[in-house]
Amino acid sequence: MAGELPTTDEATQDSGAAPGRRAFVTACGALAVTTLLVELGTDLEAEEQAEGPERYDPREHYYGMGIDIDKCIGCGRCVEACKAENDVPRDAHSFRTWVERYVIHADGETAVDSPSGGIEGFPEPTGEAGVLRTFFVPKLCNHCANPPCVQVCPVGATFTTEDGVVLVDEEYCIGCRYCIQACPYGARFLHPTRRTAQKCTFCYHRVVRGLVPACVEVCPTGARIFGEVHRRSSPLERFRRFNEIQVLKPHLNTDPKVFYANLDGQVR
Image (cartoon, rainbow, N blue to C red):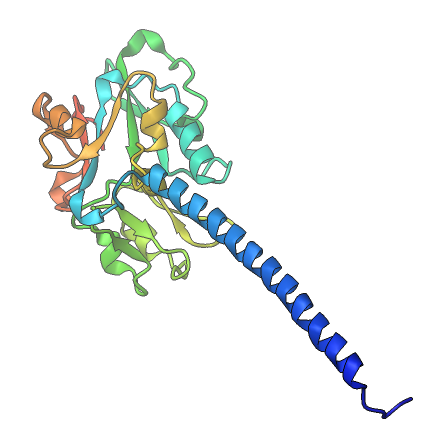
C-alpha cells in the first residue's frame, strides 16, 4: 500500500542487495579506470620511444641547411615532398620551397624560370645553341638569425624558436602580409583559404622527433644537407668546412642560415 513503511525483513533484504549492487558497480568502475591507465601508459611509452630516451630540448640545438648547387638536378622531388608533408595548396603560387633554373646565354644574358616551382622538372631551354650553361638553385625561407619578418609582425605571430627556426603561429596571424613584404627572399605566401602567412618551417614537426626535413630526405643526389650550425660533428658543419660557402643577399645583414656551395654570382 502506498505510504506504508517497509517491514524489517524487506529493509534487511534491500540493504543487503544494495551493497551487492554497489560492489558490482565499483568493481566495474575500477576495471575501467585500470584499463584506461594501461592504455594511457602504453601511449606515453610509445611517445617516449618515438622521441628517444630524453625529451627534446630546443636549447641544445641550432639548425641550418646547406645546398650544393652542383648536385641539384632540378627533379622537383623536394617541392613535391614539401607540399605533401606540409599540406601546401596544390596551386602554382603556393610554395614553401621551390627550384629555379638559371640559363646563362653566350651573349651574357641570364634567364631564370621556375615552372610550377619546378615540381614537375624543367623543359629543355629554348635556343640551346646559344646557351653556355644551366644550373638549378633550390630556394626556401633562410631562417635568418636577424629576420626582418619577425621585426615587422604587429602581433608577434612570426617568431624565432630557441633552436633557430623561424615559425608562424597561425592562431595569432591576422594575414596583414607585412612579413610577406618584408622577406627579401620571397619565401612567404598567404594561404588561399586560411588567410595566414605560410613558409618553410624546416619541417619542424619532424626535426623535434629526430628526423630531417622532407625535402632533404627525398633528394636523390644529396644536394640538401640539414644539421646544426657550429656543432662540429654535424653534417652541415662538415659541408661548410669542405666547401666555399655563400648566402643569398649577404649585404642585407639578415644572417641567413641556408648556406650554398658553388653558388654562381648570377644568382639573386
